[in-house]
Length: 85
Image 1 (cartoon, rainbow, N blue to C red):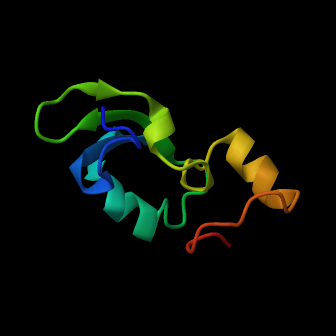
Image 2 (cartoon, helix red, strand yellow):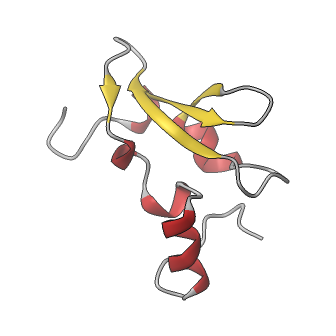
């Protein structure tokens, strides 16, 4: 892994969804987020080129849409992502 982490363009996240998980490039997730599904969130990350598993920490906290990030956003401690409502 690079010193500052992998290039986001090189990361694929698996987004957990009740009807089936979906793989999307990290930049797409960052720009679009979960849409109208507030509890949909990344559950895995991997390097696009090699498939190497990466820690979920490669997804910036404000874009994880998990309980921790939503609580920090609600408390004003974290800037909401652009798709946050």
